[in-house]
Image 1 (cartoon, helix red, strand yellow):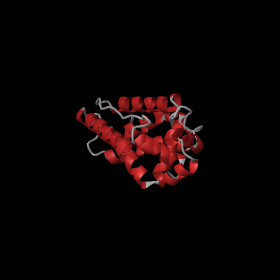
Image 2: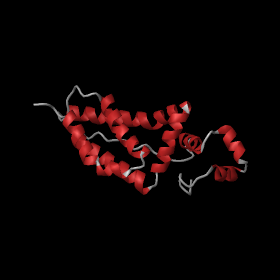
Image 3: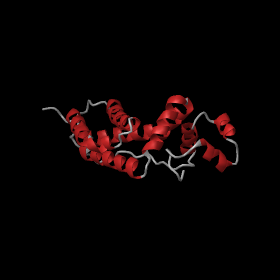
Image 4: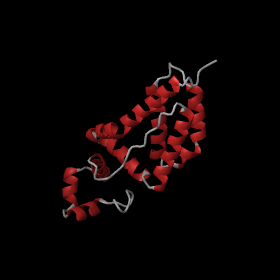
Length: 171
């Protein structure tokens, strides 16, 4: 995908494959579906970015949000991630594959980071890792879908503050 997701067209995919665009549409319903299959099969390299587990959940979260913003804005990944979200909405097998390859590793990493913070005594033991993952992943996906990837950086301090107040031990 040398031209980037926004400039990629089915006619270009067909030309590169040496087939008519009707052939592409016979196998895939949209550009998003083609790209999703390419990502899931490893033709397009898109490594999931996961949160680390240092025991300092606030620092881990800040680092993940900053790195996520850098990734989606400097490599022009945002449009492709939006396309993958569309593919997940319209194709159940793409949704399962994207969940397995991206969402689940991130959910596990959030759970591990939270567990490390609990062991360090900087997080409550009763915090739901699932709810926390939904909150963080949901914020990230929302920024992508409304095409406001800068919100990831702009709101990261507030997001971290709100989350940390929710996971910190109560006095």
